[in-house]
Structure formats: C-alpha cells, structure tokens
Image 1 (tube, helix red, strand yellow):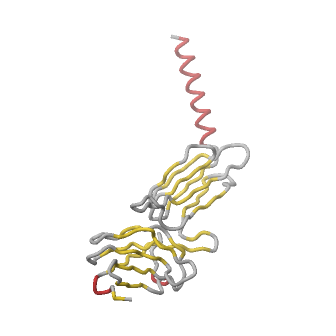
Image 2 (tube, rainbow, N blue to C red; image 1 turned 90 degrees about the horizontal axis):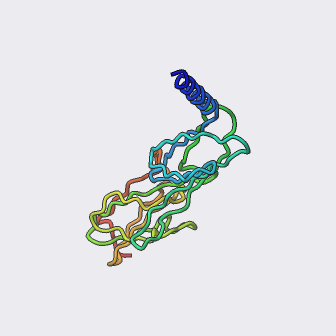
Image 3 (cartoon, rainbow, N blue to C red; image 1 turned 90 degrees about the vertical axis):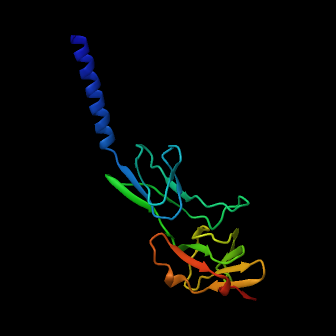
Length: 201
C-alpha cells in the first residue's frame, strides 16, 4: 500500500511539474481570417491546415526563436491547376504570454480580394481578374451554368480592379472599379453574370 501511495505521489508531482512548464510557456494563437484554408508550419511540428475562421493555439518552443509560416491553400481548377495568387506570411513569436497573429487579406503593401462568381447564364464562363490592368490573371477555369458563388482564389486588389467573364459564343461582361466595393473582412465579393450582361465584343 505504501509503495502505491509513493508511486501515486510521484505521478502527481510529475504531472504538476509538466503542467507548470506548459502553462508557463508562451503560446501562439493563430486565426485564419481568409475565405479558404491556410497551412501553418511552426516549431518543427507537423503542418496544420486551418479552415476559414479557424483558430489554433500552439506552445512556443523553448530555445532559439522559431518561425511560424503560413500559406493559403489555393483552390484547384478542373485541370488541377491552382487558381489565384499565392498568399503567405511569417512571424517570429517574441515575448511572454499568448501572442496573437492571423492570416489576413492585407500582406505588407498588398491587398487581396476573392471574387465569388455566380453564373446565371446558359453557358460556361471564362473569368479574368484585373482584366485590362498590368496584373491581369486568368482563373484557368470555366464556371459552369448554375454555379453559385464559386471561389476562384485571391487576387491583388486595386481601386480599379475588374472581373471579366467571357462566354464560348463571344459574349463579354465586366465588373469595374471594384476596390471600394470590397468591404467584407475576408475580402470576398459576390458577382453575378447573366445572359443579358454578356454582350458581343
């Protein structure tokens, strides 16, 4: 009986010491504020995929400063090509207590937005973001008829950003000057294209 009591006491002391060491260490609280998952790598731990609005809290390793790195998990087109632009960030947690950071639509001097395309027309639509601007990018995809608020990835946001849709029959429609219209925290903007909008070039 005495041995069991001693063993139980040793286990309790070890657990308390481990808890103290864990609680006494700094933690990183990371929030994904984008409309798509992000992949986070930190402190030699396995990569974690964090869903939109997801939050993780990780213990900051002791010793040399560790870099927390994250990147957007870009959606894939039907051909398996990543859509949109790469968004990534990094930080070195410093200080004590709980440190907060997040994946955000603003990175450095760049802002991003995510058009959510609804195809209310009767044909496939090819979509180009920032058409007519230096940073124009084809989504490398075709949005099918009836598709609702399709996420095509993130793209650079300017005051005069555009989203252009083209049909297989040559019709074309463009939303212009989208910068002031992007007001959601995650940078999304719903855009709807109908047959009556798609005029011959």
